Image (cartoon, rainbow, N blue to C red; front, side, top):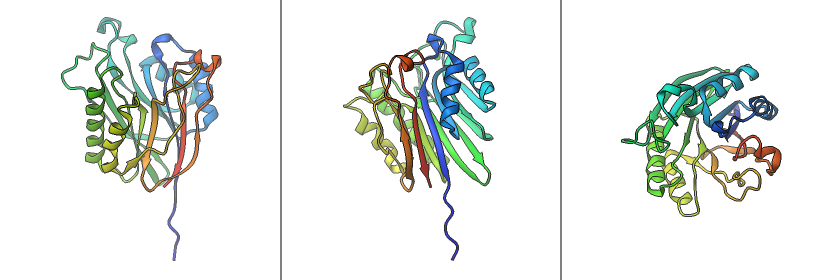
Length: 237
């Protein structure tokens, strides 16, 4: 009897605080060193995502979250991006904060792509949930989970800055349980200079086996890049 074939995926999520003009060359070096199959970036500008991707020689997709000032300075718009050395298809992005203007930082979105590597594919969803409104944060997580359910991808992962706090982490993660996604645990990731809270997650399929997890310890070097640390997770499914 032939044995079932397993596939490993090595993923990174990282809020790079693009408004503070991080060193893109160093960001790319860190990402390259992790040898990931895909990286999800939050709080990144379009030009920043493009430059990082070009430095790596990777494909990339970016979606606008909000204009921090005005569409007249469109290059300062912040958003989400997924970068990968493998082909990406079935790109989708949508608002998960209905009624909130795209001129407001409170506007939130979901970006989804399918990364294909040979005969295998993983559907990736990245988001950045509300930071100051617990009810909005939970409602946004519910909308993300609904999109995951509608897609029905055989292998899926949710990545991003979920802005969880002690009183909302359980509620947020509970939204993804019916979708067959679980939190494999992780380390604190914010603030990067001396992290004490976990805000950044990679949720994986229930049947996945976690092979590796890594989050740096933090310190001055990391703080120069972003106020968040990169989170790496490798799983087999």
